[in-house]
Amino acid sequence: MAAMNATFHVIDPTGTRRFDAAEWAAQVSSLRATLLEKGVAPGDRVLAWLPRGWEEAALCQAIWDLGAVWVSVPRRLAAPQVREMLADASPTLSICGPRDRSRLGDGPWIEWPELLSSPPAGEPDHSHPDLAALCYTSGSTGRPKGVMVSHANLDGAVQRIEAYLRHTPYDRLLSLMPLSSPWGLLQWRMALQAGAGIVLPPVVAMASELVKTLRAAEVTGLAALPPTWVALVDYLDSRQETLPGLRYITTSGGALPRRVLDRFHAVFPHAEVWMTYGLTEAFRTTVLPASDFDRLKGSLGKPCPGVRIEILQPDGTSAETDEPGELVHLGDCVTHGYWQQPELTREVFAIRPGHEAFLGNGPVHYSGDLVRRDAEGYLWFEGRTDDLIKTGGYRTSASVIEEALLAVPGVVHAVVGGVPDEGLGQQIVAAIETESGDDGLLDAARSSLRRALASHQQPHVLRVWPEKMPLNPNGKLDRARILDWLAHG
Image 1 (cartoon, helix red, strand yellow):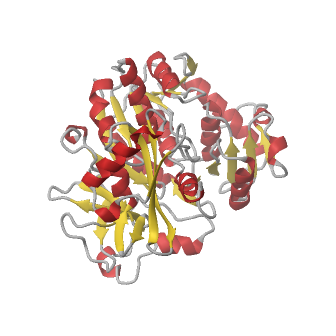
Image 2 (image 1 turned 90 degrees about the vertical axis):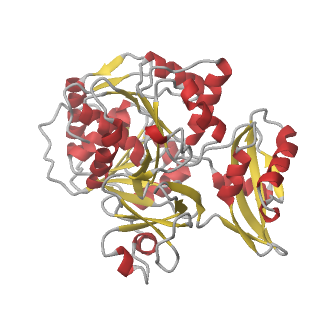
């Protein structure tokens, strides 16, 4: 990963120190020696399907020390999905947890204990290829997409984040984000560089266990996705508890209910709130300064230093102030495309015809996100180019309806989509998760939507998801499963 500061240390969820810097270096060195014995060379891909913990982070660093490519598969995937990613990545070596090999079938699998037999190796040679990782998107529709992330991408993101989070050896970061995502990799990279402590997550990341770990390990920095923030704020609120030890919190990955944003200062009384934006294909590219949070809750903020963002109309012209357009990333924040998918890479990463004069010749990424820029230069999310629903001759954004549902007291999560309909073109279907878990909020939700939205934006189907909404392997709401339930349930 990054060059290691001598004060770096790894901490168990209970708050007990697991490794100091020297012990960590020795563990990584031993893994590096084993990988060399097994023939891993610069540029090779090494795949890991491991439980969350220090093991996958140490393995990732050893792989990078050898100039190989980290391919982490989310642990919650089923065995057939793991085999699909294995076939796509074609790794030289694949590592799984103890007793996993029997359910994974044939392949270059070795179980984790087999990596622990080698003595430490010499110092690594860091003059290696730039490709750092294949970070797979959820693969909820079609073939999984392995985003090619470079070391330069990661180093640039660390520099952008450190400009505002300012980690020191006194910080302790909770490693909550999975190492199958750039955000999870960045947590370790920042801790190593700053000499901070990094805290391993609890085995079960439910709100009550997270609170125990945050307190026991004296965590100062927490990054999480919206489902975690909703669960954590609701848990603390219900118990009238706070987490005063957090120096900062940072969120990305989608919209949060206003009621959750409004409670951040109450449950995290000493924490700066940094709202950020980014995608696997171009990550940590905008930030809303903590000083602007109260005034501009929900904004994506402004581009980070060194990041160029354009908001374009389909003809390639720049959107006017407060006019929605597609957000396009340019420059070093852009990753290198999709592994072995040249057509899809051209579709998303190649400058479109008619856009050349405005965008130039550098790396670009068409995000598919519709945003607007206000008169002060702040960005606001308006929806997705692929979440537009055409019903009865009108177009509307699923995100707009979701935001209106999240404003209803008692609604925890909302998912909206369109399903084919002979008469209308598409029907608007919506599912909500409620605090009570029953259908009692449906009438209140419909009434609220009638007041907030136009008639063509009213859902034709509105249902309560039983219990808690499912998450996809990357920790976000499993929209594909929820929409399939709405269409066929």
